[in-house]
Image (cartoon, rainbow, N blue to C red; front, side, top):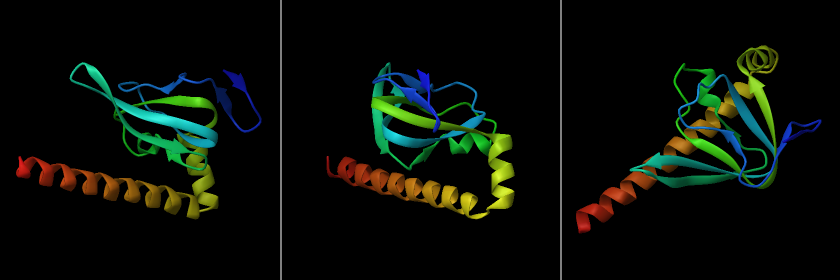
Length: 126
């Protein structure tokens, strides 16, 4: 991992944050892609792939829970780390930052709700 002006550069497959770790910051993808996965029944399931401009780990800024997923680079990725103190300082100066984060979280909740409803429909058909 090397340090860039924009953040840290992660190599393909390198873990950025791990499920179960304490979350004290959020991340912004500056370039490249990352993969979000979760341990399930002794295996790993990929939840989604994220790309430049997307934010992850932001829930850690609002709760004190452990990370709910593992995120690793897919190809080379540059990722900016934003700690809680830095985030709140910026949010006081620019409230749109908080709005953008809430908007992203809302979209992911909607996507998850949609996926769950598809799963429920498929299980009822069986």
